[in-house]
Length: 259
Image 1 (cartoon, helix red, strand yellow):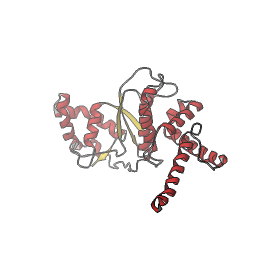
Image 2 (cartoon, one colour; image 1 turned 90 degrees about the horizontal axis):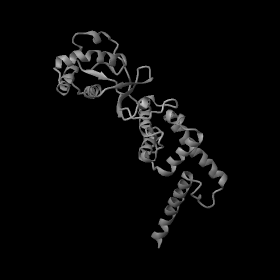
Image 3 (cartoon, rainbow, N blue to C red; image 1 turned 30 degrees about the vertical axis):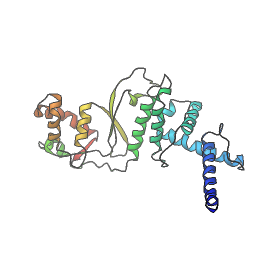
Image 4 (cartoon, rainbow, N blue to C red; image 1 turned 180 degrees about the vertical axis):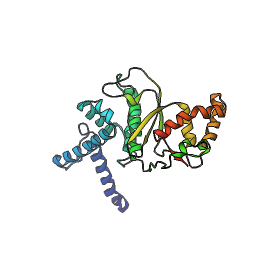
């Protein structure tokens, strides 16, 4: 009897919290706990909804522009009702919105079949913007034109993220809503001036950058040699062909300097 009584208070508190949270998520269909003044509940309802709405509008600005106010409010409400987040961190909750959009791909409007991929792309931009890594350019630019730079280890931008999409998500906006898939590979990163930048790349460039990343990555010439068989070229030919690409990656600050 005593054990049962000891268990009642936390059980009642848990039930109260559950009903309170359910009401905040879906106030139209879920009644609030008994004995709480609606005026007070309204404050929590507004705070909870507006915080999520404003947060997602900042992190997913293109998606926000693609929806009018009523559509956006409906989308946020659907997220609150349908999705159960696994993180309480505001800096990470964007990933929950991406998961929510991916889970409802079949329910997307016919006019926006690319919405889930667009959410992922915008989330990557947020990850790059918030990344704790420092982007430090090499001050000695002579290494770029040196004869031996191919044999050196390369320092890739630590904020770099790459992803492949079935839709040209980097061009989507209120004035451009693609009607047909167009596969793209994109790289997004932060420059030394803290501005987020992106560029469209091909699969070979992505594989090369992946091979060059990390403290134990091979020198550039060895990384290219490892790719030569896959493109049916000799290492020397591929090295020569890669020089303009490497110069572009250096200029765009995807490659920061020698390691």
